[in-house]
Image (cartoon, rainbow, N blue to C red; front, side, top):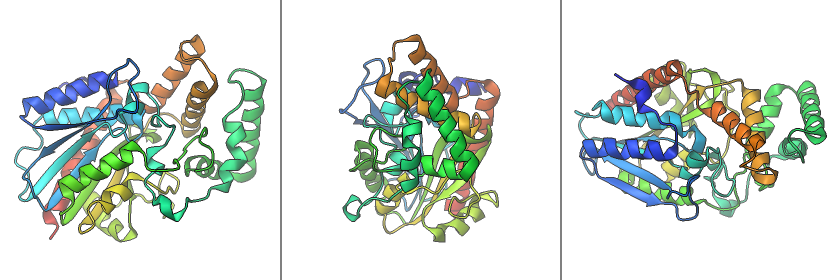
Length: 361
C-alpha cells in the first residue's frame, strides 16, 4: 500500500485525487464553490462533499479536512486513502459516512491557516447576535505579533517583548492569549470575524442536508500543528455531556481543553457548534484529531510570519517564498514516516468511531 501516495503537494492535486477516488467508488460529489476567492494558481475553490451509506440513516459520521486551510494536506491524504482502500464498504446498518474535503479551500490552496478574510474558521461559529467573546490578553501581545518588519529592528524588539511576556506569565498564558481567538483585530492572528463566513454558512447547510434528522452524529475533524511529531491527539470538542461517550469510544487518552488536559487552549466558536446546531435532535460526539509537526513556538512564529507577509510583505520575494515554506513545514511534514503515522492513527480512529456509532441506541 502506497500510503505516501495518498497525500498531495497542492490543494489542486488533493482535490483531483479526492474526486478521482470518489469517481472510482461511484460516489456522487457535491461541489460547493467559494466564489469569493480564487486559488494560489487562479483555480476555483470548492468544498467537496461525498456521502457513503443510505439516505436517511439515523447515524452519521462526518470526516472533515482543511478547517485550517494549510493543515488540509493531512486530512485529505487520509480521506483519499480510505476511499482508495474501500474502507467504507459494508458499513454498519443505518449508518452513513460524509466526507467533507477542504472546509477552507482558500487556506488550503494558499497554504494559510485562515480564509480569504483572515478569519480563523475554528473561531467563527458563534451566535453573532449575542455579542462576541472577549480576549483582552490578546491586545497585550498584538503589536508584538505583527511588527513593522520581519528581518529588522522592529521584529527583534517584538520578539524580545514576547519573551518577556512568556517569562513573566508563562508559555501557556502566551499560547492561550494568542490562540484563544479574538474579534477585535481583523489584521491579527486567530481572528474570529465579525459575521458568519462562507464556510460557516456552507457547512451548516451540508450538515443539515445529510444529518439534520439524525439521532446520532459523530465528527472527526483533522488538524495539524500541536503536540509531538506525528502523534494524533484526540481532542474532545462540544458539550460536556458528550465527553464520557467520546472516552468510551476512543479510550482514556481523549483530552479536553476545558479540563486542562489538551495541547489546545480553550477556544470558542469552533466548527462543532455549527455541526451540532444543524442536527439539533442528535447526540453529538465531536473530536478533533491534532497531529504534531514542529514545536509550538515555531508554529506560532510561522503564523506570525505568514500574517506579516500578507499584510506588509511581498509574496514573490525570496523572503516571501521562505515564509511560505516555513508555514507549510509548520503544518505538513512532507516525510514518509509522518504520513504513515497520520494514516495509521487516522484510520484506527475512524474505525473506533464507526464501532461507537454502531453501539448507539
